[in-house]
Length: 495
Ligand SMILES: Nc1nc2c(ncn2[C@@H]2O[C@H](COP(=O)(O)OP(=O)(O)OP(=O)(O)O)[C@@H](O)[C@H]2O)c(=O)[nH]1
Ligand SMILES: [Mg+2]
Image (cartoon, rainbow, N blue to C red; front, side, top):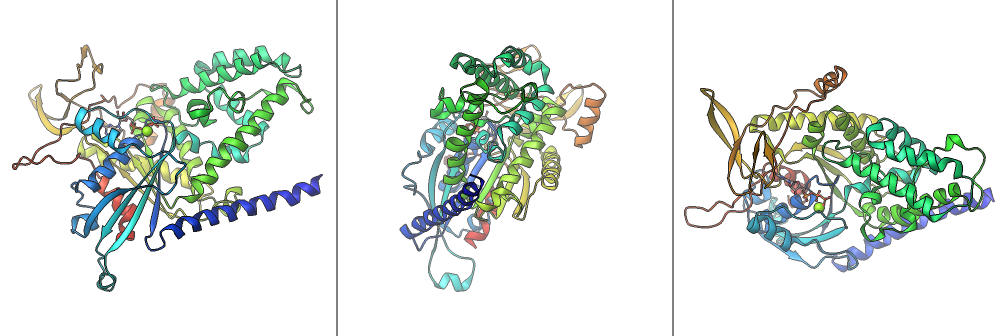
């Protein structure tokens, strides 16, 4: 038996690699002349992926203001057009609906729960004399949008059920305020673990675990490390057995699980989740990306306090482990070393004054550097920036208590509150955003002193009204440093 195992594993891994390589070949064979960049846009739920993709495509199609994106600002881009995407089995990113919501109705797009894709073709003139002689250049940009939660599943591929239980329960024990009900359910089930399994019990456990994960994700807790990702983003797998399991306290049982028991059922379903959910996602989509942007809502974590920030840091470590695993990592054996550029972007910087954008960038840089040193990360160029895909505010100064104070003007979303005031979603308001901490250690110190009150409390705004030029032309959606992200991700491909 062990011998058979030894033979099967390497061959199946080899086949996986070959298949990915063949997929890539077929893809290129369809359009041999045009180079393609596959850009993965990832981030935890509500981090701003859909808004980012919509704003990026919109600014490229509409010739938006992109001074730091050299190919555009120097006038070398002739044409940008949407094209049929290369993967027939993946839904198309609904660009038109999203941009209509943002620019016309001034509402943010709905939450997405499914992978989707869009192809944009850029025609440009090369900056190099020699290349120009060869004619116009063309680049396909395939943008892939997928739920960030799924990414945090990747470490599960390397975790036995026992390790998954240990890691999940140790995280849950740190937050008894959120996990009480789940542990109560677990205690009730523990005596039954080695008895004949019942679907009712499995469902009750899975439901209690899912409720605990959902509470972790609520805005005031803002925790990031919440695998299994499909529990919160089930897509079309809602209710399937592969999603009806939970971690168990295996220290309370001994010996191997007997067939047919609740314990064996939970373990088998965890294995099914890895095999049928995580592995195909990884192989079909992830292994084929060239470049990545990771959107991080650092403000939300800062808002929720020290614990959310350190949890975000663990999530970033896991993400880096998945992108460019070190040589000895199991992932290295199945992942072609393609991803050569990763940008980490702190999103929604328009909630801060201009002076704080650099501070936000530095805070994220610290988090990413910390994550890189902990990850088994090998290579790939990394950039970090603070940006807003859509700038919903304007900067102004307002006189308050006899002093001129910097403030942000925008239309708060209906229902947002500030003190006693509740906004109706129609009127503009000038808001004084809180100060960002200078350093993450300030947060840790506040937590150590038992002080958990958030420093930055931000109001959410509606998307902006599009400005018009003196000639009456409507301008494209405003942004902050979207052009810098584009330059880092695509600049060399359009050189
Ligand atoms: N002010 C501002 N808010 C933003 C920006 N980007 C995203 N948001 C806010 O963040 C929310 C989530 O943005 P989405 O783009 O839908 O986030 P997502 O990552 O696609 O979320 P899921 O689809 O749920 O995973 C939006 O509804 C906005 O309220 C931005 O650039 N500026
Ligand atoms: Mg989305």
